[in-house]
Length: 155
Image (cartoon, rainbow, N blue to C red):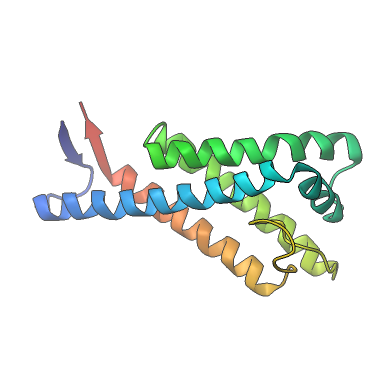
């Protein structure tokens, strides 16, 4: 296995540091998605109710999204932790986080007092911290994507 850096040659230490940071961030993001997905899979009806409270989609589409979304989160998390399809998983996790941030933002602008359902139920109502947390995780995903993009593994 050869590691090629797309930027300037700064030495072996930088290459391995970039890989180590990228791997730690990738696995952290993966664990977040696994925990989030598993909580929703364990309590599908609670998640469906919480999902409807966002008032973003009608019942038929909402039911489909509420059924599929937890499994997408779990799959993305497992891929990130397992190192499978890393770039695609990071891109999909970024798309999910943008979607979540927009949904949280709409709830805040409409002044709805609802449960986040981000990591289980009955834990917190949506507030500015919820949006900030979502955006911070999005930033970590973007940073992880950049680390993995710059440290390309060639076999």
